[in-house]
Image (cartoon, rainbow, N blue to C red; front, top):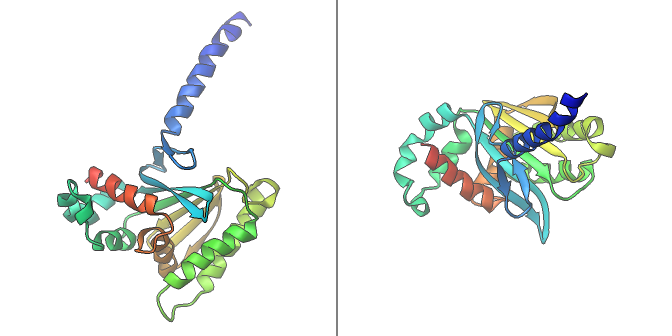
Length: 218
């Protein structure tokens, strides 16, 4: 019993240090922390999604290290002058075949219907002309199902975490670390990424820090 008691402060310190390591980067506006890696992918940038004055969620992007270097190495020359980075960089980031993971952490609580509808509304105008919107319906349903099963009170409350893993034409959805399902649609994958990386980005901070983070990695 004595040994257990003596070890308690040390264990607490170790757990605290592990927590600091696991949440190594903080999005400055929301103070939300993001782990350095997600399923082996390094974190390359963070940002915030705002709706008027409300900070809705913090967002981070993780990418496959080797794949991103192979696809984006031609932009290495812009490392010293990010302002000259052409828009093709973001197009190649979105369309490149390497794996990417978006992690959204709610800073402001909303209903599951609200977050599903908001993400769907951002995606729809970014789908190619004439493409089916059925994939968006499936995506929104996964968000609703995931919140119902794995989020407190079935809501997208503050602290709720959504993970969107893009692998080729597959978009995997997790809520609070629990797998919900996969939507098979390349247009959906690219439209979701373009919400953050096209010229009308919903999070300029994420766009800018990801460019910097990826260039530093090349």
